[in-house]
Image (cartoon, rainbow, N blue to C red; front, side):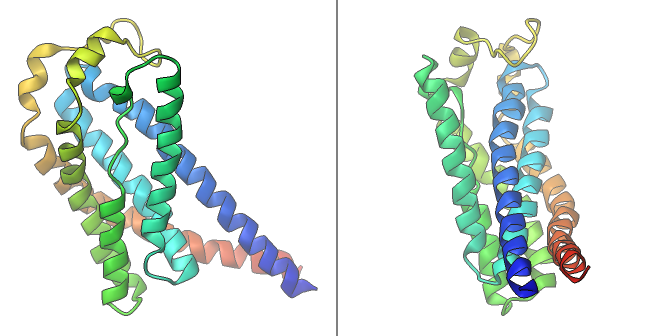
Length: 220
């Protein structure tokens, strides 16, 4: 009986965590994404957005991957995040906003690098944290900048459709567009490579804590 309780506790905790983090990734996209084109701090905003998204991906993906122990799980998790954000994008589109109003971040290739690290090191947890975590942080800003360069005239969209989530004084600033070429990617990648590793370690530790917590409950 206790074993069955343990299994179900494990499953429900695991799925709840995945849903919470994946939904948060969508909310983070919508709110942090606002600041990229809507302030004269665009350069800084891209870096902050990159770091927040890299760490959000790392904590959920490594938790899920180490939970299953199967390389490929991180990519599956990033796909869940992407689909949730597509749903949010569709909701805004249905409200009459343009298709590019919500830009879906490119999580999947960075998650693939984490999976590849885990697979290539024969499922080594510490390699996944150190190498996989830094690869997520390094690669995400690069993939995401390519994504943003493909968006149809983001400033025009920004001027025509003020964000309901931002105060009225935050209007799009045209002169700052020139800052959007190379430096934010370098700074985002550098900061991401450093900061994503401890957050990946936290994701791995959450796995351990979850097991201990469930074991304590079922043995009480």
